[in-house]
Structures are given as structure tokens and as C-alpha cells.
Amino acid sequence: MDISKLSKSITPSGTMAISNKARQLKEQGKPVIGFGAGEPDFPTPSYVIKDVQIAAEDPANHKYSPVAGLNILREEIARTTGLYSGFDVNPEHVLVSNGGKHAILTTFMSVLDPGDEVLIPSPYWTTYPEAVKIAGGNPIIVDTEFEDDFKINVQQLDELKTEKTKILVWVSPSNPTGVVYSKDEAETIYNWAFENDIWILSDELYEHLVYEGETSPSPAQYDKDLTNTIVINGVAKAYSMTGWRVGWIIANSEVINMAKKVQSHATSNVANVSQIAAYSALKNGLDETNKMKESFNRRRIFAIDAFNNVENVNLIKSQGAFYLFPDISFYCKNNVISGVSNSIDFCNWLLDEYYIAFVPGEVFGKNGFLRCSYALSDKDLNEGLNRFSKAIKEIK
Ligand SMILES: Cc1ncc(COP(=O)(O)O)c(C=O)c1O
Image (tube, rainbow, N blue to C red):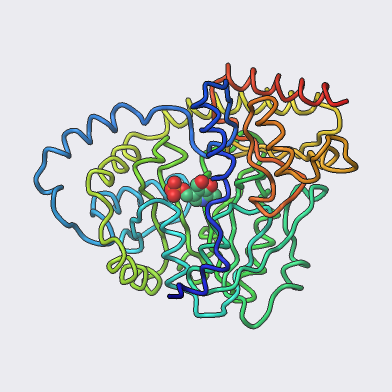
């Protein structure tokens, strides 16, 4: 019996292979240090846990609740978005999903028709193209260069635009590069999308994690009726709540009503206690986020310095999220390291020989690079980057 044609084009989450191998080595007792994690290494704030314990006792939370989310959470999302992201939100225009990831898939399923094209800047977070394919669309990759700080420009977008182009994916700060577009740069891209009547799916999961320079304003600041803009956000990264699985879509009524229909047949409401957890996180402000941010920034500066001191490794300035994306292409060529001809080989070599696990650039559409998450303890960061430097020095 056949299964779907989609099975031939879809790939599993690309970080799997290296993290499985890292786990196996750890189980064998090897001192593996992982730079792969896309999640903060801090606990969820203690007030969230306390509020959840109370919520778990409340029988109302043991039952189905509205698909779009609990009213108190939707209202709190609207309030805090107004406060932090600088645009007014009607709580009716919020749909709470099982994480930002689910919000993105639901958006594609709500907006795309078969064959519609979605422009995705590369290097990209590995889920975007796969989610587009699952929803029946075609991912169109907008390749960017190290020399341009991995930023897209209008000329490229013009060249790739067709009558089928429906959505532009926008994420600043970016996973995997940590790049943040300036206000001017962002506005130029937004205007292009508005003029061409193309949706912007603005993934704002990392909005609170910008360490220097200008922050990109949300496109919703310029598109108050959300005619062209769909905002995705969640509590995973900013409040260290990856496991609670709460994200959301902010969009106009037409999109939200369709997304509600899709979600009503997929998952119904997000677990009520998780929604209370997200409500508690938002209600209590950004103090805990800012403490984490301080640690991330210290580690970012340390890691940038460490990579800059390694021969033939190059970095762009990553100003946000918790990732660096060093260029290691020198070591993937000309047999510099025996048996290494791409960044997958390079990452395997680092893991096999030095027990340090990075995610190869291929996972994000870019050979010759690796993604380094600095969301790990200062001690591990220090030890892991020392091993990286040693590895390069020991190449014969
Ligand atoms: C850019 C980006 N968007 C969305 C997500 C999804 O986050 P979650 O589903 O955990 O809320 C991630 C997680 O890695 C991400 O990096």
C-alpha cells in the first residue's frame, strides 16, 4: 500500500541526526557538550509553576475550553503585544496554538492554496519549508550571503516573485543566524510586500532577545488592520517555556476564523494548564526574561571572541536570539581534514573526536556553516569552545 506523495519530499527535523548521535555518545559515558539546543537552559519562572499548581486543582481546567484560547490569555496577549511590539491588538484577533510551530503550520494551512509559493530567506529555520509543503504550498528559497550579513534585499524578492507568490516569511532576530534587520532595512522589505500584496508571516519568537543595535519593528506597526500581516509569537524562548507548548497567531478576522476552523479539527484548545502558565508568564512582566538575556549576552560576547580567535573561521555580527552561525567552509574543502567535505562531515568529526555537538549548516539550507547555540552554561560553553579551538589547532 502507498502512503502520501508528500512522504517523498518531507524531511524530519534536521537537528535529529546529530542530537541522536550526541545522546548515544553521552549514554556511553562520553563527556559530550551540546551546542545544538534551541531552548534556554534556565528553568521556567517559579511563579509560573505556582500558578499552574493552583490551576491544576480547578475542575474548570479539566474540561474542553474555547478553541481560540482562554479569554484571560487572549486578553493578556493583546495587552502585552501592545506594550512590547507597539501595535494595538483586539483579543478577538488572537488564536492560541500548541507552540509557535503549530501556529505557523496552522497559518500556512489557513492561507495557502495548492501550489501557492512562499518566499523563505535562507539560511532558514528548518520547519518553514516543511510546514509549507505539508500545507500544499511550494517553498521558494531566497538565498543570502555571508557578505550581506545573510540579509535579503528587494531586488532578489522581485526576481523570485511570480503570480503565485502568497507569503514572505520574516524572522528578525533570526534562527539560525542571530541576525537582526535595522528599522530601515525592515521597512524596505515590508513596503515591498505591501506594494505587491504579499502576506508577511512575521515570526517574532525572539523579539525580546536583541542585545545590541536597533530592533526591527513588527510589520504590524505599519499595517494596523493586519491586511497583509500575520504575527506569530509564543512563550517558549523569552520565558524559558519550550515544553509548555504555547504560541499564538495574531491576524485579521478572516485569517483567525479560518485558523480556528483548522485548529478545531486538529487539536481543539491548547491544554488549559499550559494556557494558565503562559498567562502567568506574560502577566509577571519581563524581569526574568531580562535576567536570562543578560546571561545570553555575556555568553554571546564570549563565544564571538572565541570563534574570532580561531584561524579561518569567520563570523557575522549576530545581535539577537541565542545563535551564532560561523563560516567553517575553509575546513570543508581541499581535504584540509581527511574525509571532511561538507559541514555535516565537519560536525561529525567534531562530535566523534572532540565530543562537541553543533548543528550543520545544511539543516538550514547552507553548507559550509554551523549553528552554535549559546544557550548552555558558562562552564560548558567555555570548555566546549576550548575543545573547538584545540580541534582546529590539531589539524595536521
Ligand atoms: C524561529 C522560530 N520560530 C518558531 C519556533 C517555534 O517555537 P515553539 O513551537 O517552541 O513555540 C522556533 C523554535 O525553535 C524558532 O526558532
